[in-house]
Amino acid sequence: MAESKTIKEILSITGKSNSLVDRSELESYSVDGLVPKAVLFPETERQISEIMKVASRESVSVIPMGSGTKRSLGNIPPQLDVLLSTQKLNRVLEHEARDLVATAECGITLESLQRALKSNGQYLPVNPMHTARGATLGGIIASNASGPLRLRYGTLRELLIGIRVVRADGTVFKGGSKVVKNVAGYDLPKLYVGSLGTLGIITEATLRLYSIPERSESYLVSFTTLEKCSETVMELLKSDLVMNSLELLNPALAREVAERTGIELKRRKYALAIRVMNVDKAVSEQMSLVKKVCNKGRAQGVTVNGAQEEKLWEEIVNYPWNTAQENMVKLKAGVLITDVPRVFSELEEHAIHKDVTVYASSKAGNGIVDITLKGESSSLSSLVKSLRQYAGSLGVSLVIEAAPPGLKSGVDVWGDMGSGLALMKRIKSNFDPAGILNPGRYI
Image 1 (cartoon, rainbow, N blue to C red):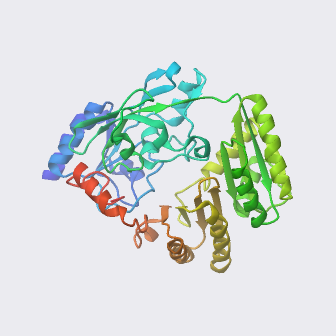
Image 2: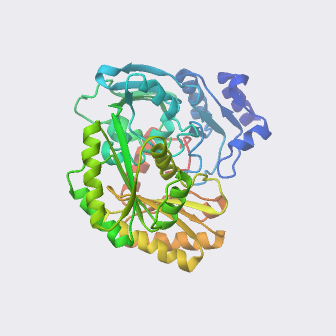
């Protein structure tokens, strides 16, 4: 009875029009098989604050989300009382075009934000997964999603300069500033980047922007061997080139991306996707150098621009295209740039013996490796364990970003967090003493 009374009190804050309580509707918002007791769509930061005050007082668990595109990320929660969506906080509050700075509510989709910024010839240089499916600014910050453009511009950590957050007890935290130049001291807004909603509910962000480049052109090029491909990557990185994106694709992913994009790759082996964005003259000069370097490795490539180029990068960014498949696992690891070829070779060898299809790409300029495995559940489970052991031998963690609940239930999706885990737990305890925000999903 007490629990029902608390949920009713929380529902009164948003009202019937901004909440869901019907079981048939709630099931579509389940998290790893757990169905929430209510889904809330508050319209203001103040409503979120009032919800969290009640939740804190009554120890009600709250899982924050934007549009839900990253619900697969994290461990299975031990309990799920309320799912809170920021979707209705979706306004651009300020856009100081002369200062290349914008402030927006965090329920706004990245697509909507980019459209608003485009009117002044500017954009936020991130291109993470699920943009077309409605990924929100808050969700992108909370998961530290970035995409291939991070090679040139970095991640949200570099682009975020101010933030507003509703903490677990309902108080509102404001950090950073609304100008690029900031004062010395602790940069607390950065603490929320990648925190996965465990430290607070992000409601507003101020971001550093860039001018939309005059021209963009890409080169999709395939190699006879992984060795030739890797040698080319190192030469590109050591050159004077200013590349916006550099992605290494394994044969299965290169083939799939080429087919989906309508590009004919004569050699269906390892491939590089290279993107240069700049003024017209610079793009022409840089792409000539790109092709010169690639030709040393006896590569065969295709120049891509316009709508086809946008399609190419959408396909690369969004594979495996559907993360809610029972026969699929999505993984991520960060390794040394020089270890990327070893990881790709290991993936291919494991896949042969375990009858699993492996799609893999690497942000070759910083060693982030994205892996998708498709196959029977028993084979997937066995391969994940093998890859975890291999990652451990390299001194890195292998994160499970999406997997069927059955596989998740037997593992910690984050792997070994090392010496940083104790510090993260202390921070979590200080920000959320009762452990009500996204409990168990991260720490």
